[in-house]
Image 1 (cartoon, rainbow, N blue to C red):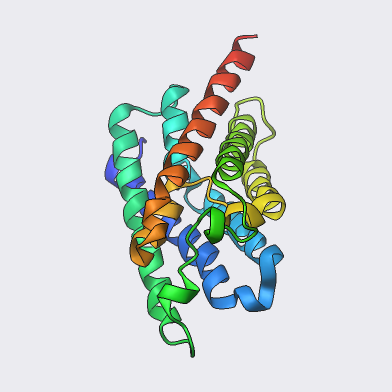
Image 2 (spheres, rainbow, N blue to C red; image 1 turned 45 degrees about the horizontal axis):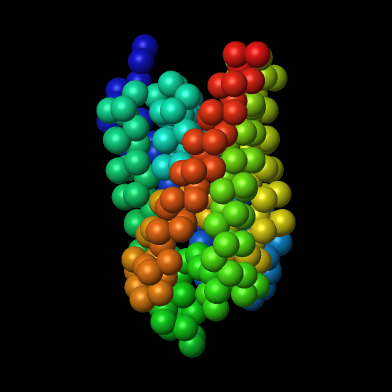
Length: 229
């Protein structure tokens, strides 16, 4: 029996909420205690568990870059892709709103100075990396992430291990590049906190929308080429 579209969209909303709430929440609420390594694992584990939780319902995209890449690869319809992306954005906004609600109860927290887990480059990069370095990082890391997703969810892949491969790959790319941008590879994850924070976070947001989409499309194209071979 095929899952109803609205059920899929709701699952995507819930999954994206969990990703943003746990991932960015780990940075805002516990970053001082767990550091970059802890934040990387928070993002990776949240995706890992969501793959098993909602994967059978929606495929667990929880990321517009993944949805667009799947559209390019012919694995999702145009109508569903629109529904998925809208649901992902709604889930991300709810996640950021809940993180903010909790953070305001933390002594000394101010969104203007502490942020909400938004991404950035230049003076807003954790390591001070410039726009070019950030652009390359987001494209390459999204390409790697999507390539793992295509491979681990292929029919010939070992069943039951996709969640581990996807979650660990997200953890790995965060460990390697979180100091560059805070790492996005997910427009929804970037859009929600940036709009809450405002200012330069919104001004730099274009990069964290465009770069992951480019990386995802490149992964879809390369995967289709390999499949033809």
